[in-house]
Length: 257
Image (tube, rainbow, N blue to C red; front, side, top):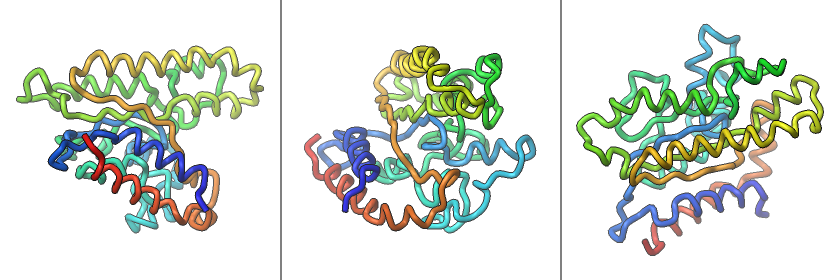
């Protein structure tokens, strides 16, 4: 039986990757630049946490057990949608930004588990509980990107990101969670919705306006929220998820450019 989450993942991949391959079957994308929260983080929070934050469950099984065989810093027992996108495009998994020793020639991931759309200082100024209490907002991630940009573009001319896929992962959910963690009501959170949406919109605009020739896709997707639920029920509920990915990638490889 097809699940809503599986269908959403399929639709996202089809929308995001449509036309990604040229007539010769070769991907037109040579790198992926990713932003977001736990839906996209491939290890930034874990690298940030030691010794700044308390021990994280992400460092232990069952995180990572169904594909990698060990924890990788992803908030799932297997791969993220971002991993499937990279695989479908013939690219390696997108390395986390904080893994400074990594080669970022095929992409870099700025996403951090728990990242909000609004800045930490602003949320704390509203007397809200922010978890984790670190500067990992959308604005912060864009600042990291700007700092890394010279090294990413070294020797590549003005069309540095012409073949880059920019993935704007989910933002906003953690802002609303901060209100709930602070015992605020939905009505108390509602006035801040325009600010959260505006912050996300501005982030996308910055990328769209700054990167000539690049492609920006926004994703609001679902993954195994192991921070809140055990892994085994998901194995039974979403056992056919891999079939959706296989179908979508098959469609991608045989679609007209």
